[in-house]
Length: 389
Ligand SMILES: *Cc1c(COP(=O)(O)O)cnc(C)c1O
Image (cartoon, rainbow, N blue to C red; front, side):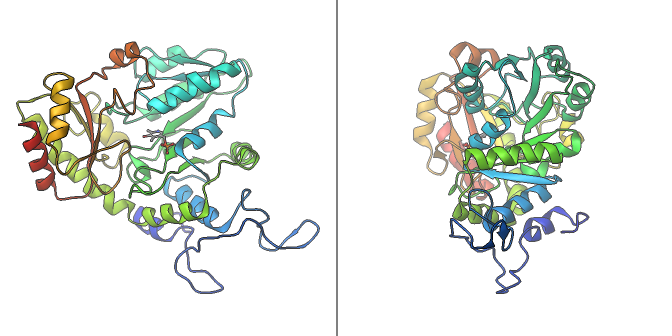
């Protein structure tokens, strides 16, 4: 597909032109585990076995790569499976440098799964490029970041981190790889590869799918050697995205730009409303001019995802009463779907973090994370107003 084409065009057409044989305008759900060969080592159309590659997944990977300005993408059975592929690049005694504000499941993967292989994690003191640079050591192989972060939407200057990591060499004389988990902004609103990141990871379960009906993950890269290593791992370990799920994600992606605009619009409306409410203690929304690092929204993003977090006045009691008063917002894990959801990070998405870690980064019992759907903002505000009173 022409790389000069704009995002909305690529979302509908990249990797998904009509099937030359049948003219079908949608990518077929390729329900076959294997492909006929013409002879020893002779593949008919480049496909051999569906774990290695298949038409549904190849189409989706082509689309996601185009949307992230990457050369190649790889799709996995979940966001966590995609993260695992990245972590498999590590060797014993390597170190991951990260910040405190990352997805709870990523924290758990680092500490509970990979630490036993002799891979250590160093958490930068602050969520700043300077602090990340200070944390780099001769063992650092990976720098892992998230912006805006889950759930407090902390922003960090991606180009600035890339710049600071660029000239650093670890003891293998390699530059640490910079990974950005781009789940929150989605490819519609932020493209870390263009800011100097080496790998972009996604939980496609969220905005890319957009309809809360599929679990999926992706990684995107620009470097051919890196892609070969990750592709090898994808086939060897096999946590691939199934064809039907690829189809669902492909369908979701086509409306991503439209949905993101509405999610964003609703987030602005609701953030303003919450800020003016007397039962709300604090609102976290990068669109506010006085939000820390607000200038990064214009610098590295094209818009904001539909996420607003806030602290309700009072403790767990208030939170429970608030939840009980809601009629429209659904209490559930996850985000990025067309329906508005909310969650309680302390007991849900970030339960894997020790209490002390949560306190340190400000994930308190009265924190609530909202994921705005694409409903009418007036109805969402009415729902919140009723429950808050
Ligand atoms: C949900 C999420 C993940 C994990 O993705 P799954 O698809 O649930 O495995 C990773 N990172 C972020 C930022 C997420 O929100």
